[in-house]
Length: 188
Image 1 (cartoon, rainbow, N blue to C red):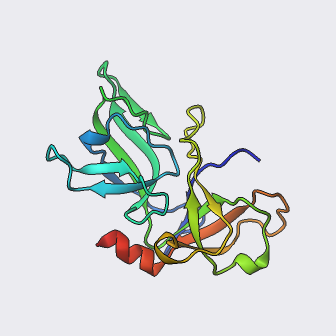
Image 2: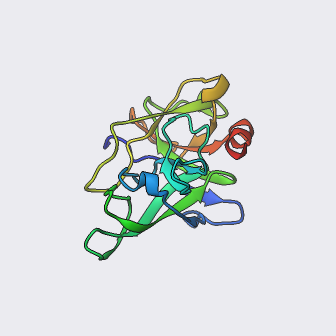
């Protein structure tokens, strides 16, 4: 299997499979030069130095301040041409950059794990593992999940179950959601 794809929203309360809702938020001008890939956790930065606010990629893989996951973006490039993409390209010359974000609260996400699936992982508190940025061809993030028990500040997600119980690979897809404690820290 390919090396990660980040977090994928698969279900939101009251929605069917693959119909998770998203919200559109501005990308902060401080983040215009930062690439954000589909599946990366994002924060809403309201304390930037130059008075701008907006979405930026989460520096903490634990997702402590994350409000959601990037599912796409739109912007105007340095030539004045409108662009749409599965990822935000991170060109400092862009303007009018907007992020499409699947909110963490109430959303089930699918993510690639780093070890073979065992039923014992259901209910485990886990942490996200940062990859090497993302894939510029597909636009996908390289964030994965460590199928290992986590505690404390890094335990912001919990395993709901396997995406496919018959998957015997060493990198299975699993379903996760943010923990109530993780959501509390994100809103603070």
